[in-house]
Amino acid sequence: MTEQLTWRKSCWLIFEYSVRSIFIRKSSWAGTLAFAACLAILFPFSFGTELIQKAEIRHGAFWAINEFIVALTVGRLFTLESESGILELVLSSGISRSALLFGKILFVVLYLLSVQLPLMVVWIVFYNVPAASVGAFLPVSLPLLILFNLGTGTIGALLACVTARSSGRDLLMPLLFYPLQLSVLLAAVSLATYTDPAVVMLAGTQSTSWWTILAGVPVLFLALGVLLSDILFQE
Amino acid sequence: MSGELAQSYKRWSKLLVPAVAVQLAGWWLGLFWIGADKDQGDVFRIMFVHVPVAWCAFMWIILAAGFAIFGFVRKSSFEAMDRSAHAAIDLGTVFAALALATGSIWGRPTWGVWWDWDPRLTSTLIMFLVCCAYHVLRSLTPDIQARRNAGQVTAILAAANVPIVYYSVNIWRSLHQPQTFVRKGSTASSDVGIVLLANVIAMILLTFVLYKLRRTAISAEETLDAAREGR
Picture 1 (cartoon, rainbow over the protein chains, first blue to last red):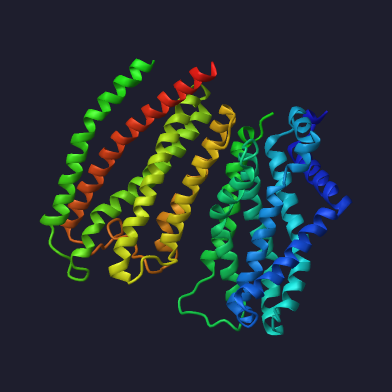
Picture 2: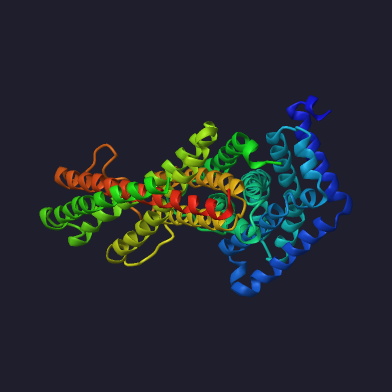
């Protein structure tokens, strides 16, 4: 049956299935949000409650929390399917591997966004973000979050497949993930900081390079993922 | 098979001495033939080690990705290409570490710090960490086929970082100087360029011999493992 599915339909099927399986129980989503809130409390005590309210530090803290959420999410990307045997079933059904990967990446983007939007409210309240800074950040926040999620989600999904058969998966995922996605994090933090009117901009600071990186990383890793999808997913 | 490997190892071992001699001659030129730099003094001489080492790191990581891609395209040579990529990443890791160390030694007297979160330095560190992760991934993946697949994909991912490292000095103007020799209107004197080029060639020759030795050692290791496991 699935052999007759077009690539787009297969992709949508995987996306829809992943969304349903996560949001029906909601416990996983609520757990991730609670974890993000815990981190939001942790940072002021690590850096000092006064220092965390500085514009540069509070933006860094927001994206650092996002980092941990992404690592947690992509680390468990195929866990549900692997444990229930659904992944083997999907692979043996002949569904396009690249559609499977792309569907999962789309799911990661949506899932992360669903956690990040309430987290942003928590961040604004807990870190006493001034109204002027919120006003400046909000217009760019959505494209910034989507591109950040797409970049980190793509790298994470690729690595989740690479490390799937390794005995030290828990160690390997962060070991590979954090260095590879650093450019995305750097771009997101820089762009968010540039928007803040409380930050004194240095002469010659340009945001175009950061936008290029933020858009280029997902394209590069998505192309690699599609090209290598048959190798990444093996029965 | 094991006899062939032993012979190959002996053959390449013999070439190691002349390769080291050529490299030492290159360093001698850099140390004693070239005059001191008017701004940096004698400190700049570490360039004749640092630049070739860094270029070799890039070269071997890119070659590893090339081997991996070739292995995926031509299935019949997948196993051989995996061994080649493994040996190349080994060299890439060592030379990335050396590039970081020599850069740090250069940075201390010129910038006043051992380390700065400069884009070139940071991206090189990332490249080194991904190479380290490649080794951890291989050693923690018990199934040979899964190990080969994961290793090859990681080799490609490691190479994806090389252009970022290379162009980082152009994209983000920071502490690290922009490319000195490849850009138009370079201010470096021609004798410095010639000695640097000689050192780069010498280092490539040396790393090629090291690559062949490591490649042979990996083949021997895998042959031994296969014999032990009865594959």
